[in-house]
Length: 281
Ligand code: GUN
Image 1 (cartoon, protein in one colour):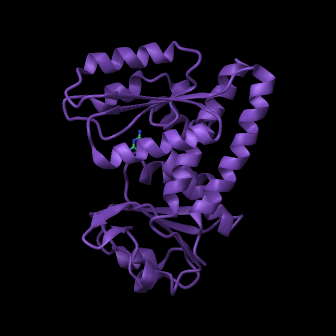
Image 2 (cartoon, protein in one colour):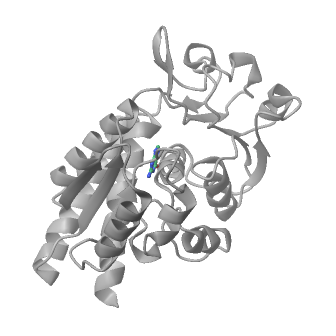
């Protein structure tokens, strides 16, 4: 089975559009998402354009603020503080990576945690790891929704997460624990990755190495979610060797058309949730 992320994301967006319409009648206001892009990173420009397009499609107030790469850090922090105090803005996302002279940690910590649609603020990271209500980072959130389309009950499954980033691997681990999986976190220094993967019912590949996960790494019937987006001479490829793995796995996500579209749909979902929480305060 090939997991169709495009279709799942379209279904989620259509549910979210209905929700936005309901909120509009109830509060006479719609959720607003502000995305900040600093510099000229080419993939970031594409991601931001797609986020804006999807936000408009579901009826959110969408704003993109673009700054040059030599932006002074203080200007960015002051803009974030202004957005924190603007009640029309429900969610704030600062696209990463940022230019080197800007302190990423300071930026993330300046975003009000109630408007942190990325779930990167330490308050949200802590709440997620304690099992409390929090914004959930969009990519792992999307992965968990795709997983649950294949298998409703993940309890007791052995999941292997490849990659330990704050964006993907670590929050993914927390979500899998919440589903009662047994989780092994692996990374670039793991000694025998193939053996670890062969024990997995679920593999989440989020390490940024093209076609790392091979067909003979997969236990029969495993579910494989590919978070990788790697630019190669033969085009965009994931961290999973799709041709080999799709012959063995029970289900696998393609790249593109797997996790990517779900990430954006989950961002819209998080924006709506931030709006609802702000309204109920
Ligand atoms: N750059 C790549 N992925 C992401 C993401 O999920 N959020 C932000 N803010 N930047 C990113």
